[in-house]
Image (cartoon, rainbow, N blue to C red; front, top):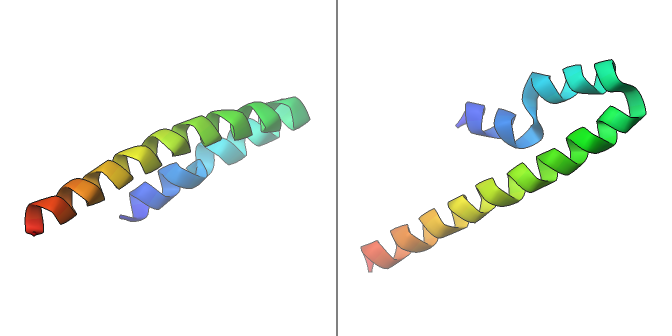
Length: 56
């Protein structure tokens, strides 16, 4: 579960790219993180919905 949180926030990779690319890189990283997060949250939502349906 801790790894999941790390991937959601970008982990150390996000910080590294932030340092390397400066402000432009920060915006690029932010945008890619948003897209990746939406995908992950979508999967989580589907998983919980499926789990709830299976229980009842």
